[in-house]
Image 1 (cartoon, rainbow, N blue to C red):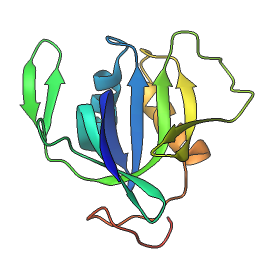
Image 2 (cartoon, one colour):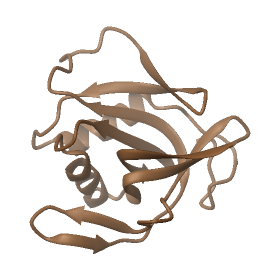
Image 3 (cartoon, rainbow, N blue to C red):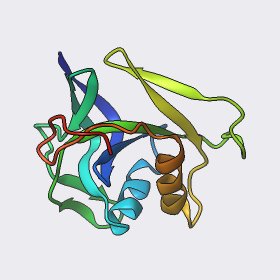
Amino acid sequence: MSEALFNVSCVCLGGRAILISGAPGSGKTSLALALIDRGAELIGDDGISLRLSDGIVIAGPPPETTGQIEVRNVGIVELPTTTAPIALVLDLNDKAARFPLEDKHRKILGIPIPLVEFRPGDAIQALRAQYALDKHGLRVPYRSDGGAKKAR
């Protein structure tokens, strides 16, 4: 099974994908760029392709815009892309609780993925995203070619 997901950004950090969702203009691409600056790799900006592999959701670049990311006030920039298993959804939301009191998930292709509501726009957002991945993200198998391997 495969499908596409639009109006999201997605990066790979340490072999695991962070899917960034939120309202238009909430800073999805800005967070993706900040994570890329911290060593993440682009999967897709404003859309990704999805497929299941052994019960794991794999995110890949969208065929129409592979390697393209819009940098505000600059234009479209070309970057290398990768594929990775989705380990965490960060949902950019101005009303995100300061301290999450419950575990949340979003089902993607029928698989529950941990979801953290994330307040957008502060200066250390990328660092907070990396901590969120380490604390809440799935420990998913991965390979650099997007297939399955031992869990990390």
